[in-house]
Image 1: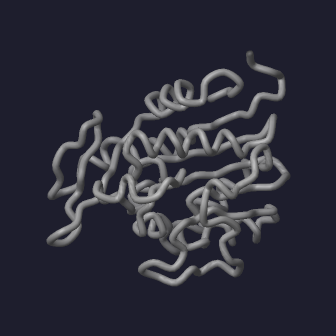
Image 2: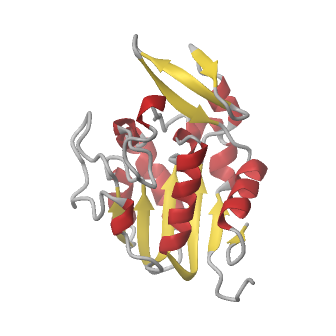
Length: 219
């Protein structure tokens, strides 16, 4: 049953519906890597490219104003740019990023706190943020990541989650349909392709409620 201190999971409606914002975050999952490592975040080097410079800083700066005071985990931290912005805004922030030095160097002033999700202690964080990470994960890995986000939240904590919307994902060229609604494999170069799925705010909320179950409030 839901306790008064149930963690609150917030699918960010602004982030989910703003196509321009979400197009700043580009990442994907080659389907052949799905079973390579058991991680809450996809075992894919592309995950470290979910953050892009000034746009990332602005997004995290806006989100920082919504976060209660406390300990924050950025789940799928990309290059660490957003986590540094949180720290600039006074948030006590740690990071989870399994591929911090792929394609580009890790740009944060601090090394990733965690590179394996199993190492993150349970019931630890007042805030968990995950920005444009879930939309690059096929269903099984995505659900695992959602459960991990719930696991590491303190009772009464908050998780803020954004994803790309359906219009942004479906507008990609050189794509083929995936095995979920609004999911595609988008061709990247000659030999690789990445997974992307678009969500409406309502669809994301419904999925989080189903995966997390009782004990969480999804708003």
